[in-house]
Length: 102
Image (cartoon, rainbow, N blue to C red; front, top):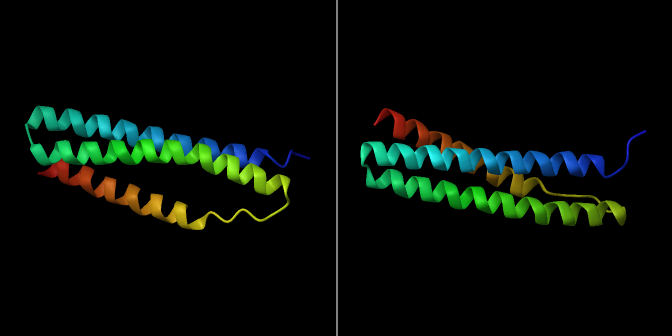
């Protein structure tokens, strides 16, 4: 049998992976902006970097709140932030395609 905190740890690590992936996308968008000398690509890179740091910061807070809920035997309801990050990542993917194509 596994510990009750293992699921929370894995979820936290997946949020960190998402944040680091977004940070990598921000670096790539910034590099592409420098190569193509496109000002709106710089704005996109900055927006993705802000999103990446937001996800990384939020993941730590989410981990602490979920660990507290598990200790207190309360349900951990975190569906809305996951939906918002999913939509934001889809938007980043669309921006990435636009940066490559245009």
